[in-house]
Length: 222
Ligand code: CA
Image 1 (tube, rainbow, N blue to C red):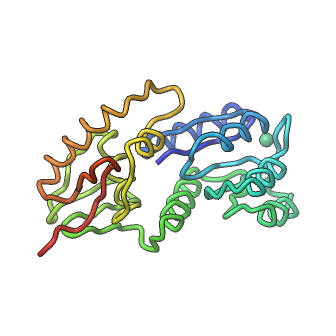
Image 2: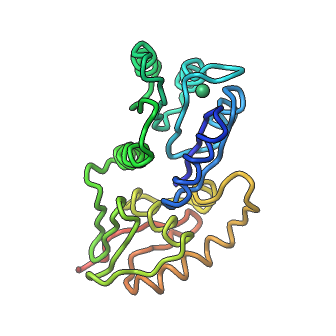
């Protein structure tokens, strides 16, 4: 899952970015409204953390433009404690949720998890596909009750496929959602990771759809 953080306070931006990276997300960051708007307009994000008070272009305007142009990714806005009107304006502009500063980073993480899984149509924090379970809260997965030992890349790949289970996901989509903008993207590496993940899962859960991509689904007959 790939997340954009738009926050002009450098320390706060770093704090959020590092916590998200620790939790297994790929993160791009912006420090003003224009840069943030551009990234959200041109790159596919699974969620955005958007500060309201930003230089160049304020967060409400950024959000209004995205929504007007059909950008539908979940957006969590950051508002100042004494600015209740920002929450109203933000939600009216298309925000999905808000967190008031100062906040505990766990609150940001929990709200993002909820936004991402709801955007993918899941109500429960635990995603299940046949013998495979993925706990979005702990970033851990198991098969038949046996914990999987996954690298961060493998976890990201599995989490993305689990959130979009039963759908065909193209290699391009995976590259876009598993790597940040600075990464040397090569869709061949996706095949390598899928191969490793298949071996670790030990079940035929990831189907290759020729010329289209991959689909994670429950094996037939059990
Ligand atoms: Ca600010």
